[in-house]
Amino acid sequence: MFRYVLDGFPMTLKQAKLMGSRSITPMIIVELELDTVEVLKRGLADKMRPKKSEHLHLSLLLITTFCIFVYIPSKRMQKKKLFYCRLHLMHNSAEILHIRCACYKQEVEHVRRYFRKEYQNWIQVSGLKSKWWIWDCILTEVSISMKYIRSYLERTRKGQAACINRLCITPKELQCHLGEFGLYCPVCLALHHHLFDCSEDEALTHAAEHRGHYYKMCGKNHLERFLLTPDEFVTPGCPHTLKPPDQLPAKLTEIQVKNRFPQQGEMNGFCSVTFLEGKQRYEALVQGKINYAAEYRGKIYFFETEQKRHKFMRTPETYLIPKLPVKVPPVCEPVSLTSLPVLGYLEQGVSEAIIKAMTAVGCLKPKYPFINIQKSALIYVALYLKAFNHNSTTRNREQYRKKLALFEEDCALVPYLGSIMKGDYKPPNERPIDFEFKLNRFSALRVSPKPNSII
Image (tube, rainbow, N blue to C red; front, side, top):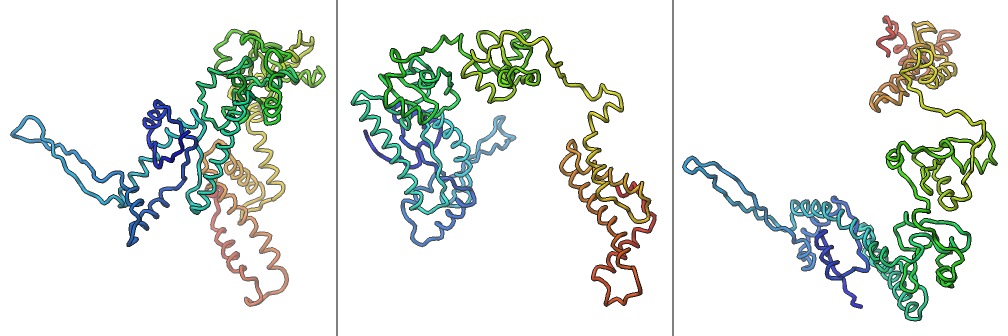
């Protein structure tokens, strides 16, 4: 095993695939997270240093020239002349740093996605920390990987099962060396006769190798138990075997369900898990959702939640119901609001919003200056509905919320002035500080207030 560090390589997806073609697999790839502003700040600070390190000087050198091609028509020639202009820029200038950052952000997304999918060896470290913190973080990650590699070599040399985490095993290699249980947990199958599908978790944290085959477990406890006595969970020691693929449950997406039309769901679309957990009562007959569908033995089942579907996927035989009761609740199909009459539309569409607005009117009891109570209440309801209309844009809602707050402040002028102006005359120095301001504001509203202008 060779140990070496590649600084700044690979930078592109082509370089990454070239390393794979040469059987060069990095154990760990560390990405230092740093925003563009901090990169420019550090680059310009390094430029101002009188004695710059040669290593830093060379590391900034990526692009030294701009090549600009300009086509200029010529009357004497039918073709166009090509002029080549070269603009020399400093390798550590702000323009070059901007270009390097843009190129890096464009390329690193593909490289990061490639290594995370193929080898799962990509880690991200904050570049804003000190160099000692970064060094300690990287050293910790390397130590963890070396620990897994050392344990794997020692256990396989003794013929024992070994964890394959941090070994940079690709998905293709995993599929080629899968054991007789595929991506199902053999410990769950042996102990509880449960089908626990581990395909959704792409990580190999709880995966192990035994006799040249790979097995994935559902958790840390099952991994430790498998590593301790692997022969109890693989053939011929396993008490249960995995059924053929066509007899295993499989999740279905909404598009896959629609493509199966005219095939309908079993149990008239009711969730079998909810029905059995509810002791087969009438109240437990709940319609399943198309987003949580599964197929088992050529039949489609719908479930109420993702947790209910997960229970069915683990033990599908438990939730197979031979038939439904005679009395079932009616199917609740969505009704288009535009097909309802006016009263039905108001009841189904805006009743909740109107109730909230009327409740707010009853709590506040607004009275706008120089307008009667009925008009004040109507204006407040209109502003409230517009201020909390979810179908409106955010800008409009904010605009009407400001109008609603201003309307409430104007309504508060009447009880305020009524409480202050009671009793005998008070000189200006004995009046509240905001009295003159609110009195002038109240008088300004006397000039023919129009409800339309308020809304």
